[in-house]
Image 1 (cartoon, helix red, strand yellow):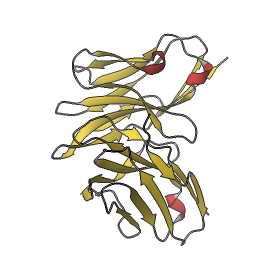
Image 2 (tube, helix red, strand yellow; image 1 turned 180 degrees about the horizontal axis):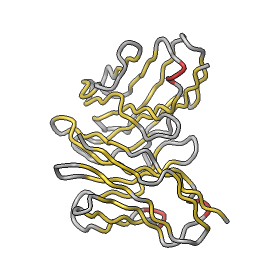
Image 3 (cartoon, rainbow over the protein chains, first blue to last red; image 1 turned 180 degrees about the vertical axis):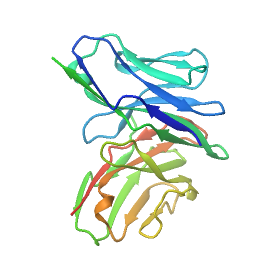
Image 4 (cartoon, rainbow over the protein chains, first blue to last red; image 1 turned 120 degrees about the horizontal axis):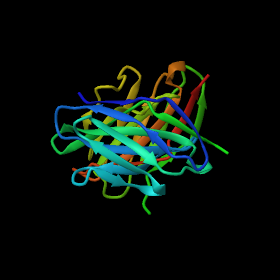
Length: 116
Length: 113
């Protein structure tokens, strides 16, 4: 079974500083990787995804992530954060659940807090 | 933009009572998921449907939880009886058949007293 490890449960940063949220996965087969953001009492919103092709993936709100197969990592980065980026961020891997069906396995999440 | 709808958004109940949550996926999405998210953790899959058939319910506590998608469109998740440990966010999601992108609803926040 595939698993996802988010190395930091909380990341505090100052506004306009760069940030990196770390994610490692374990899988012996081809993977599809995702980052989702969750604001308080809301559902999950897709930030970006890696399915194939370029290992540098750009998403919404200025976020990007790099797929590194040799290090089994998919770290999320933003060069300059805003107060509004304060939220919980989840890394997820998609695995086949039978036939053409897929399901997501999530990490435990990283709480990003942007301080003024 | 099409969205996954869920109701209610918030539910407070007492232990041993029955609760039910409803989900309407994006039109045309054959795959529907119910996830449970305990506070401070990532979502965990409870049950996955392909049309009206259950594909994966290995993590569904079947002694108290049930899920159905009778016509392959909307779905209901039921808990009877509710226990204190069931307090969580219940997220519904959907995807097109064979797709790897999943769309999530706003969730139902359940509090069991």
